[in-house]
Amino acid sequence: MRLLLLLLLGSFATLQAQSADSVEVEIKRGDTLQVGKAAGEVFQHLDLYRKTRWAGNEPSYDTATGSGFFQSFFATGDFDVAELPKAYTGRKFVVLGVEVLSNKKAGQPMNIMYLQGEKPNMVIWVDFDSAFESGELQLLN
Image: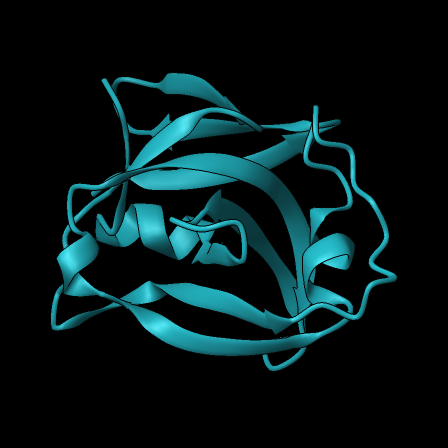
């Protein structure tokens, strides 16, 4: 079993597969990842957010690095959220940003990645470590 670790270094993330063959890959804003397979009808570690109301005073974020994306998209307004449906299997999405947030339930840091949805008001929220471990998210070869 491969274990993937996320290390944030400035504005990019480094993935390192811990096995006999160690592989290191940089993932940064603008890269493309592919949605893998869901165990059921929905993905357990990928959620689809649709922003339904913009407050009009959202802070800007650094579009070159993705820094500050969470505050810009999620700090104000209203959302619809659902688990990503199985129909998204095999589709490719662009990385908007990667950051570490506090998991209030577990009391530990949580590595989160944001993928650009099909429309400007859509974002796929990815529990980064769990999504890679389960095969729900894949690196493109």
